[in-house]
Image 1: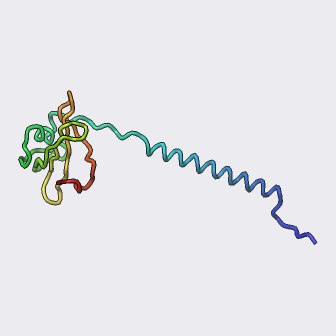
Image 2: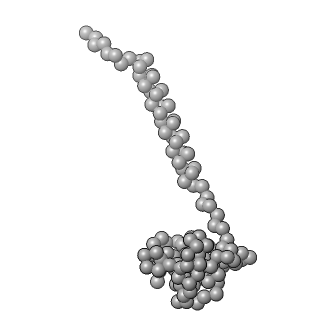
Image 3: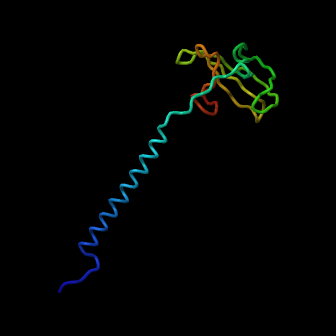
Length: 131
């Protein structure tokens, strides 16, 4: 006695083709995600002479403080040079604390040949790498 099933060879072919098509679409989407994740970060724009944080960092000694008007907010903020060090790249870098209390944030500027002081990305977020 032969049992008749609704699942035959033709159905199995369509099922296999459908699974292959779905897998191909999934692979294409994954490659698009990898491609965007590997894109180069946006270039850092040089600090202009009008940047009070870079101007302060260029001349201050560690521990120095001043008040400056920040162009991005239009308000004044306290600037304090936290530290000055030579980076692994050989550039001189300075970390400046901007603001006070809960509004305090850190900015890093490094000396760049020909461009003066330019903003740089810190290697560690959250300040856990401070001495």
